[in-house]
Image (cartoon, rainbow, N blue to C red; front, top):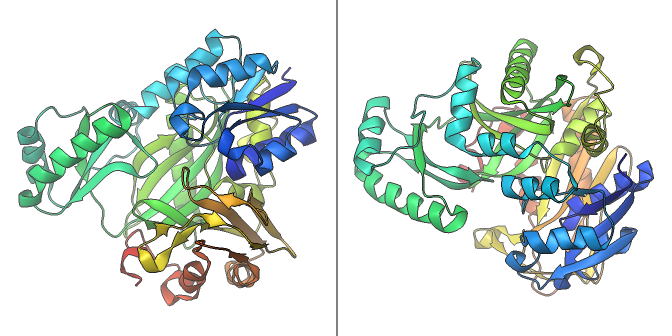
Length: 447
């Protein structure tokens, strides 16, 4: 049984994990950089330990420092949250070798699915639909250009090791291709240490829909319905909701079954997300698997009543899922808005600074996942996410109205600080969003 967990992350996700640990009677240890010494997760956890200086490479991404912190504080397990080391198979392997339970999928499964080319091959063999493209990494720009010409433009060039919206470039013509290929390869090598690329057809007017799965070590896999994540800026999600609006139940069931089939084929264990593109004719294509808890997991929790962090911990402890697919129920509509310290008027430039005012929404069926507080200094070193506002209502119009009210209550300001609050409110008021006819291109043409 797991009795203590080192939370190897920061911000709102670290707070989220600490809270479930508290409810389960599990001792939590917040691992932090010196910049985050006075942060919310450090104040809320049962114990805390400093990993190193502010830069992530010297703290949150420093595998020896994280392992030594877990050893020093007597942790049984390590929860990586999302980002940082959460999808690093080497880290998962080291955790296991050092005697710590890694709260996530096995290292070898993560390695296979983290390699986008390998993941495509596994899912193709499992019968999941794929967009036309290369099954294996492509070695040369000439070979890639020939494939792009064959499958037709636009295409997207993707890093095999990419993720989180990084390491990809959309190409609209053969003339653009050589430069896009060279720049994407260089960027992938610099960011991921892996310059391998592949090419696939790009759907310009598609919906980004994902399926949450849970799997245990006993062969049980269930899906928890669909989330729509189509509202994105540069492949970074802004608004998410569940269920995916105007998506037929039959299509959701088909996608859920495909995700379960893919998870079983990969030997997946834990919480994971299968991402799909849905075209205008109701067809869907597999994109990738996120081998971790998603930022947008709260909307699934709100419509299912399940605590996904609790389920992660139970599975990591070796327990079987306590329910079957038939037991999973869905109620109402949940919407999440990400409040980032960014300035939309300056092309969403980061806007860190001191929060001299911090008022967050409350009220019926309103949840806020955050690490922000009055007097908190938003650092420039990390992701700009300040808070996630999640609402639930019996139907979508009521959920939109509740979110509009919740956003209006937010007051996050201070020297240098700007947020995306008003931009998100404008999106919620747009006729296309209210009619659920938006797609992944909507934000790019919104202003």
